[in-house]
Length: 386
Image 1 (cartoon, rainbow, N blue to C red):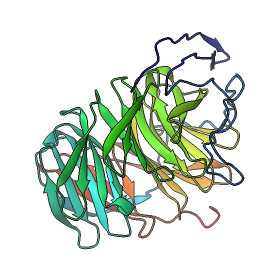
Image 2 (cartoon, helix red, strand yellow):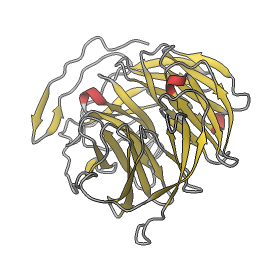
Image 3 (cartoon, helix red, strand yellow):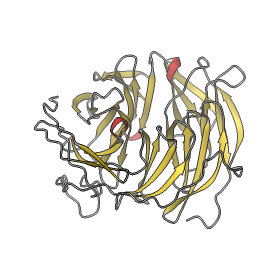
Image 4 (cartoon, helix red, strand yellow):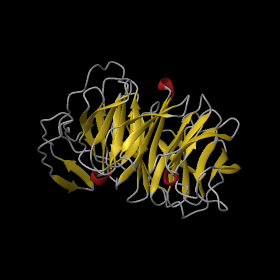
């Protein structure tokens, strides 16, 4: 895929808000201007086709709530351990997880064990392990395709795994450091971020082949799909931005810089409430953004080096895991987040939650000399939470 041959960046900082000038690029995948307009890739009500690039504007952000550090006060108990299930592999790092709740299967990236662990959440047993995946980071199950997509950093590609046979049926692309993965269901395309700065890899999910690479202007952390707007959102951590990609045209259509963003990495979307959550590794904060206005509505402290976010949409509860071992818990209340509590466990930087059972899954690399999957029961939120 062709890449941009020329880019001009001028960054001015005013009142801690980044103002970006137009980025010019004539090739496929060219970058758009910074904008206040919400992402729109034609999936919402009354929308069709790809959105025209918005006018240049400062991405103003208002900081509505600033909570104290999670270390500053005692927090209520919101999670209690139900079971520690022994996991195969050595006492080494886990990374992303992906849950197929309807099938009762949890897919865990056991990164430094070079394997994908498939766990049955109903019987609470390991079903199988897929080996030969060195440096496995991102993992995403797509039930409608009977596929799991896995970012294999050691091979600089994406492994495609059949969920019926658990065999690797394809390896796709050449990518420096594949990380976060999103599936754009409206276009049947998979998007994979490159944390080494090489651009967003695009995969044709119908044929499991690479069809392009989109320059994003920096190192990308997590990548997610927003079903309401039809856009793919990417955290470009070295530019302190979140960008929106139109999966139809495979072009960047918007860049957003938010006050308080510092090395944004983890992303999650509450599609129903039109909220974007951003975990910032540079300053250990969580930003809540209203996707209808692109304004920051909450600014929260979390554990150092936050990574994976998980949302229970039925309880409106958000979990923010961090490399420091703190899992911060928030309830969506009205238009903002309310701190519900926290738990601390060694290297608890990845979390998954079932909206059906409300059980929380946290793999831990070394508990008593073995890796375990910790299953935790959540305390229900207050009845006033809506």
